[in-house]
Image (tube, rainbow, N blue to C red; front, top):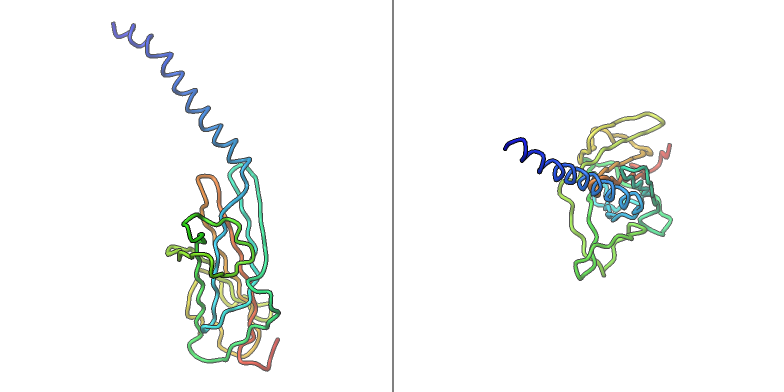
Length: 189
């Protein structure tokens, strides 16, 4: 009797496995065709001064479909400058962008805040930080807010912030934020 039951159930097991494989392949196919993604907005300040930054993003899904964008957070041509004071605080906040009606806004080109949208702070943003001066890497590692021990003399510093986030089951978005700042005026090297 047990053998007869196995013979009856066997085609259903095979059908179930085939349906699961077909489902996974159809998800993979539609994911490969879809290369649009939701863009987050970043707010970058150094000692409460908003920094003029360049942003570039690379969207990748598990099926080698890539997309990307880049731009500035302002249209004004300004030089980032701060005084050499203690402490020097770097503040980087990441926000999800929504329309007022609650729908996600995916085409957030330019990384500029506007009054017509809502912004939800991303609490668990994983950031990496690189600080350079005179072609030397002064710091490379996890994001830290207090950079007083690194930015401790007059001159020009180059700061890079990297964020990688999952955007779905097979997708990720890597954001690179870069800017330079003249600390303490005068010496711009």
